[in-house]
Length: 404
Image 1: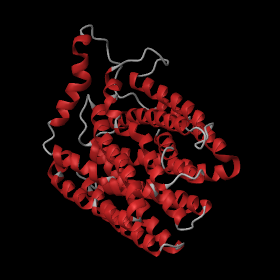
Image 2 (image 1 turned 180 degrees about the horizontal axis):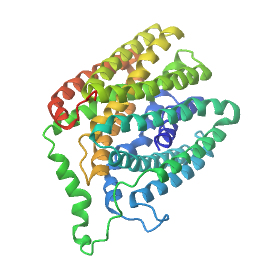
Image 3 (image 1 turned 90 degrees about the vertical axis):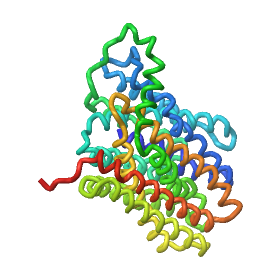
Image 4 (image 1 turned 45 degrees about the vertical axis):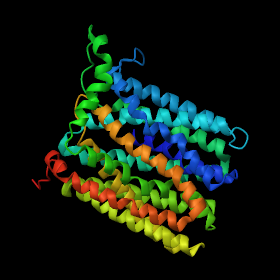
């Protein structure tokens, strides 16, 4: 399921950016185009329905699995439609279809996160987060380097069709995941309590977190730097003279491979040293990566050795951060509102990601790449401060590592 989650993520971000660059779109337009991923930021609006509403279709599956299956089928269909559109001639159709891809992918992510959290107790949260993150990174390699390589051979249409077919793997994972709990029984008086259970109760329960302000602050700041490097990586590297083949090989094969290793390492670090240590390490490494990107931009030329060093640090830290971030948010989710809580918190990070991508295009076009990457590094300082403020609460919720 993590693999199926990673496939559409890049198909509406960096891979789509490469396609748009080839079609002649400028940096500002590409930055604005990241708005098609807004459904990731607002999925908290429909996540509560997945906890409470029962679809009367799709075999004898658990209610939340029915939503997952429906989302995957619609995701595959929308990717097939996107494959047959030309951004130059049908830009609005591309925008609408790409937004649909994001919507169905976000719905699938809600189901994935709920099933993962229900299947993992507090001592397994690191392993569960790492498993999802590893699958996600493999999906990113497939839809990043794989899609770009395929476009060289069969064009973008054939490439996106192949990516749509890859999402079918998620159906296999979904059907083999254990049910989170027995099928809920119908409540004859449920209609009077429906809206309260759907929206009010999950929010009230989440607001009881004693470090809520610091939690929100951390979520809003921790993803900004990585988002900017990911969303505008393609136009930045192409502006330095890197080819499409070099971009795919270095950033999507080598880079995402290191993300995969970072995700695996993050699971071990969370398990042995705790979530806070994992996030601190990832944040410091991301600050270093942003500084190196600024240095690369200041050279203004094809500098392969510095790019490899920079991407090595950035990619490994992104993998660490992904696992640590999932583990961090999972500790604040409480049954029976797991899907609602995780989705609401994660959506805040997605919202900051989209807003950062849109603003990054403007900053790069008007102030240059060096300023953009230096500002990205600075945004990680408040993230470290907010993380420190939540230290005590995390220590109370996390099960400490025991060699036995």
